[in-house]
Length: 198
Image (cartoon, rainbow, N blue to C red):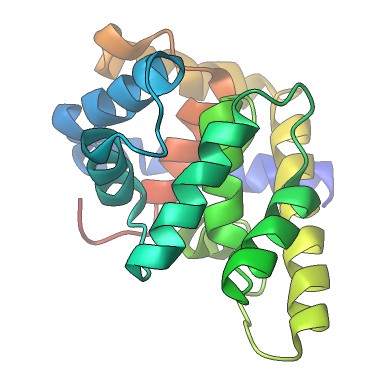
């Protein structure tokens, strides 16, 4: 992704900030904050309250067995020193025989708030394809490639003057959440930039 495209995307975000911020209810930001603050205080593999909050915030779907293995993986990954998207993506595939790039990224973004989220809304805003077909191997490779592209976008965005302006406006709009990482603030703006629901 080229710096000029990154700058264009940030400019688009800034021009739509009032509408984007309206789709960020304080209660949802507080829910995210609670998830981050309690992650290391509880065993998320068995904490039903944590699991409900996480599933609601990130729109986690799936069978009971999938959720059980997912939260067990989250509880394990929070002790890992090195976050690795492909490792988590493979672990989810091994457990449930499905490719869940978005849920893999949301797990990692919970463990490390400096990592971005892979989401259909984010892909749309970043002008990346959301095509989900093909073989398991193709979907795994495509998921990894898209995640790397999202990470590249965030790395380039932090070098843009508009990044500071956007995160500064977030801080003004939501002063109780200024401690969120720059990545998460931008992530939330991207996530809400195309949505029609809160």
